Image 1 (cartoon, rainbow, N blue to C red):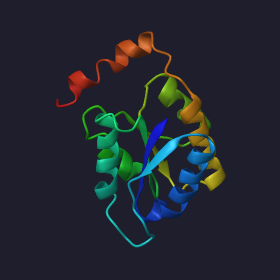
Image 2: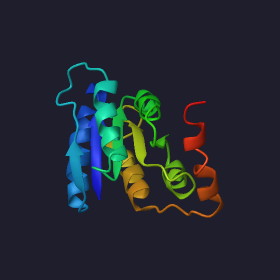
Image 3: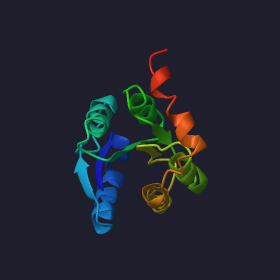
Amino acid sequence: MKIAVACDHAGFEFKNRLIEYLREKGHTPQDFGCQSSESCDYPDYAIPAVQSVVEGKNDRAILICSNGLGMCMVANKIDGIRGALVYNENTASMTRRHHDSNVLCLGAKEFSAEALLKFVEIWMTTDFEGGRHARRTAKFPKIQNC
């Protein structure tokens, strides 16, 4: 799977570990930055990453900042993005099973790297269940610009 990966300064250290992990699992990560732990603005990195998903250049995206909130808010401003802030193994699974999320948002300062990688593993390997959930997610584009 092709995965866009982006972070701000708070997620920089984990981003590098995540990219290595994704490669080990046979995925193709595309690094959208940032490239250092120097203070930066997360929208500058989140927007190009999620736009690559909408454009079909990447299958999904993973965004990392200190708590995941800012990245998630920015991601969900883009039409076609279903970004989810994950904070435990259940939410990592449910956001795929029931909501077909295509962007995973993580808080690098909230969890250990091991916990974050577990969330990523669950999110990457969980399929959308469809059915009644597809009916619900099909309504998302209709309310995009309310």
